[in-house]
Length: 357
Image (cartoon, rainbow, N blue to C red; front, side, top):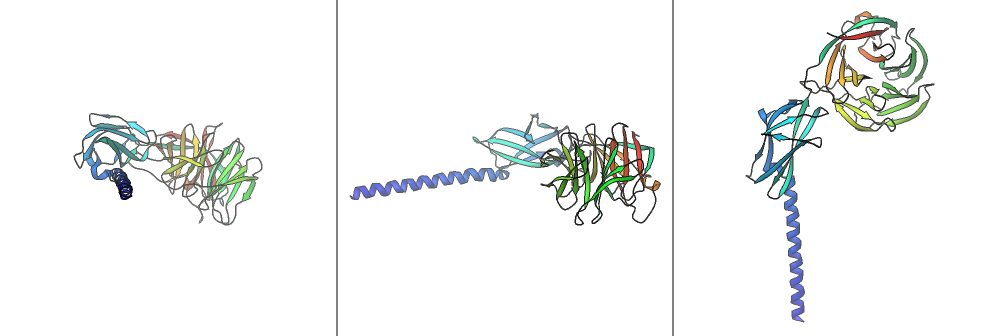
């Protein structure tokens, strides 16, 4: 009997010991991952964290505890970056703020460490100017937020609380052909047309509306995801692009309006966060620069700001009055191959040709 009790106690102690060993191993393993920065860090040439796309940059792993490193694999956005002779070619498809990941193999295990970097455009933006082709009357009481053509009809979204509308306009005469009002609590923002639908944003209500382009009857509404606010909209026929007042332009599913991805707007020197009203033409996003008399030309895949259009002087050609505000509103007329631009409470709509200086 005593021998049986002794064997039982021995077995229990042995099981307890194994449990302790297992837990200790798990804790140690977890610690080796979570405390990876105690062992290693990524050093980049010049202690810099801003680079232009395609830059060849010196890289090294700082081995703080003299571990036996057998291999290091680098990646950005899940794409492997090959190291050659201590150099990394920082070439990515989408520019902006990134995490450079280094997977360090050592002592029969591995850990991942990261370093924040900004990958900027390879080239500075080209400078463009404009030539006025025609001038048309425009409702000076319209606080223009979005502008887009469907055939020869201009669709316009206007803002301000208690004054926000969606309207169809005869651009040649300035006559409002049809108009619906938003709720007094909603501030209208950008719009775009996809198929037979008009999609319109509100500013801070975090809700968008979908209407029939035929009669402006409301079809449905949708909520925003991670985007902070509603600013501008455009589309490429398959995807919808949405600005929100940050450096990000969100890419929305055309059926569900869910934010599935984003690009970041960057120059060759910095990440830029002032894209407002949007228009899509031939792979490029044309974006009003918020509070400026200029427009950016953005590569829709990479986010690189490839050009800047200087619209200075245009505002002086409209009626000067107390409510007059900044340039805002871009619409491309595919049949004419020209852009139509106006501003908030501007008395004119301008048809222009954009040319490189």
